[in-house]
Length: 109
Image (spheres, rainbow, N blue to C red):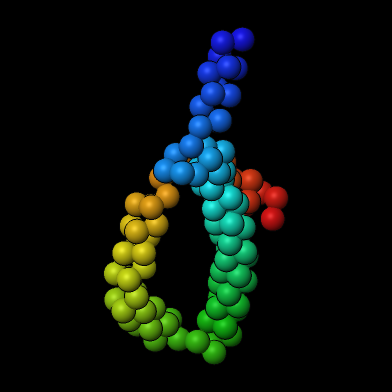
C-alpha cells in the first residue's frame, strides 16, 4: 500500500505549475502523433518507390538524373532537417511514454 500512496503523492503534485499527469501525458500524445505520421509517410514512400521502379523499368525515368536530383535535395535540405531533429529530441526527452506512443500510433493508425 505504501507504493501506491507514493505514486499517488507524486501524481498529485505539480511541476513548474503544471499538474504532473499533464507532464507525463504530453510525450505520450506527441508519440501518438509521430507514430501516425510515420505510418502515413511510410505508405506514401512505398507507393512512390513502386511508381519510380515502374517508371525506371519502362524507361520514363533515367537513374542518373534521378540520383543527381536526390543528392541535390539532400545537400540543400539535409542540414536543416538534422537541426530540426536535434531540436525536437532536445525538447522532448526519450521516455517510455514517447516510445509507447510512437509504437501505438504506428500500429493503430
